[in-house]
Length: 177
Image (tube, rainbow, N blue to C red; front, side):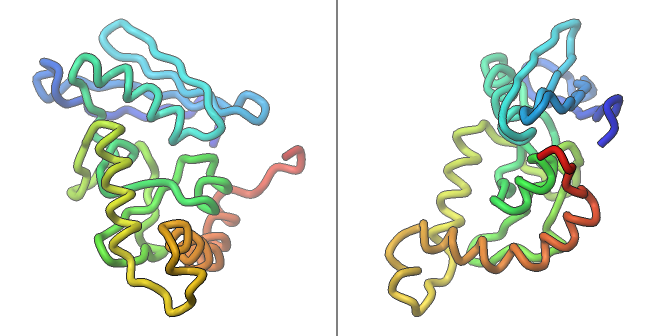
């Protein structure tokens, strides 16, 4: 990501008329991720450990006005995963389907849009993620079936190898981190 990269995202709800847009500008600030959202002559800034979390903080402020960004980062069917989030600093998330583990082809940029974007409020996205974790087939390993932590561990293992290679080529680790 270059320091001057910006993402333009359509906004829906909140009397936007369907053609209003926001500009999101990510900026690395040491180990933190600062995200600036400019819309309607307003600016919202959030600083978090990753860009997905910063986007969630901005979304919570937009939600007060009934506004939702139309992008994968605000979609019900996506959520960050440990390896993916760590290597992309939260700019890449996984699309998920009930009962299925994500594949390499399920990686998307949080600011991209697609036919399958389903914008929701932050709390609804978390509920969808929790439901998705519970929908995963249970492992025969008793340690892995004890809770959703087991599903998360299993997800971590299945995603790590394939995604790590792809993300390493897209987002090389900086030597300072």
